[in-house]
Length: 576
Image (cartoon, rainbow, N blue to C red; front, top):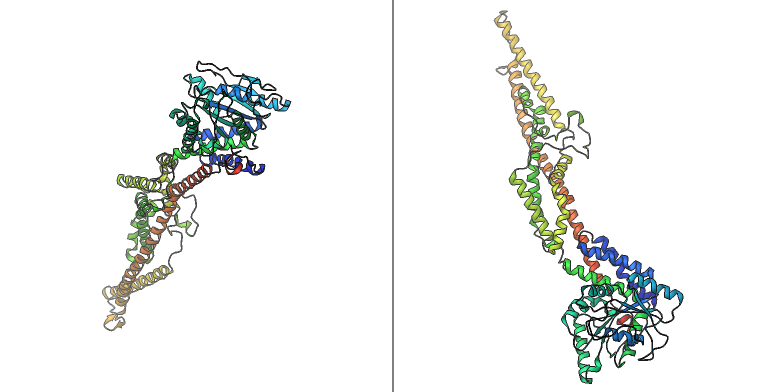
């Protein structure tokens, strides 16, 4: 028998209540990531915890659970000190749960016990006698505990088994009643005891009918049962050999159950154990999260960016910016006699709805830019983009459990369907340097072109006048000369040739500027595309992975939380 060592009530209550607070946080954070049935079970548990605390916080319910023939009803009578439950050779004997109420509780405690049994839907109730009619000189488990005799957990009658399973999930203290013949039964351990390993702090194991064993057989059976329980995670559960027929061990069992049930935080401990068991199930369902996908192929984001830029036409827009700048430069620095030809070419930015009107120059681009007229991506570019999106997503979540991959991909699906709209809007909002001031040298070059054109016109007019005077008025005039060349010819040819040379130089300089602008705009467009991809895929994916990390941390916190309990473990139990 283990010696009881109390811990401060406040400390125990805080430690026990913490798993439920973590579970409440888990239901909020895990929405969409955890399986729906796990989330529903968590919400049900939180709701049940609130109801249990309100119904009868000062009353504890202890249930005897066991397989057919384990002698639960006989042990129930032995603990009660009276023949209250029906005992017979035929099976099953117990068809409905039977509650044994304290002999003389206070009116408040009696009312609380009644409300609690109503909540548990236990209709059959008996009152313990004031003094035992047989067996050890003790009655029941105390004024604040109700003892339940449940139907067989392995009953062939499905309704009986359902009642036992339901109440096993609601009572505060679990007393597993085993017998020498079936204490190692795989069905009992695998389907009932092992899944309740988290409830070791509120569990007691009784090996009944030990009067049928010799002393050495009894010791071997107890040791073997302890080994089985330890392998299933119930290391700190006491195994108490008992005989309901002879009364052997009944007092020890009663004292052990009383110690567990009378602990101040037993209700919270049971609820916390439920939370840990649910967390263990959730962690098993979603799997253990591997390391974050920072080790994903570094080329995958770049491949996605390249595919998106090709699909949305970044190069097309950047080249159009360069072409537009060259056309506008032609309007300003081109050779004046042929400058009109540049107006015959259509500005590609206007065709794409990416160039503001001339009267909008200097205005700030609107954040809500209109849609562009970029051509739809080719089938090859569209397929490449979708493949890149899939590869990027897979690289980030490919090592996650399949069930989590499916949920994350489903939550990202809506974003990927809007990818072209978002990319088009990103291009439309990008500064293409169409509202900035023209280079200053354009004005100077244009003034020089006008001056040279006027010079050529003066020379041409002078030559025309000399021709008219000589041919029609017979007044030969000898014009001034620059060397051997008449000045009118110098003015005409000089104005034309210098204008042509200036246009050639201006065109080269404009092309250099257009190349630089094209490079800047291309980088700006790629940055805008990257931001749009981050908004659609990167950020939501990071948020989902962060949520998954938080869910995993909460599950780990629940599963690894202290399992010390009333009367056992570090918080409440000393050494044997």
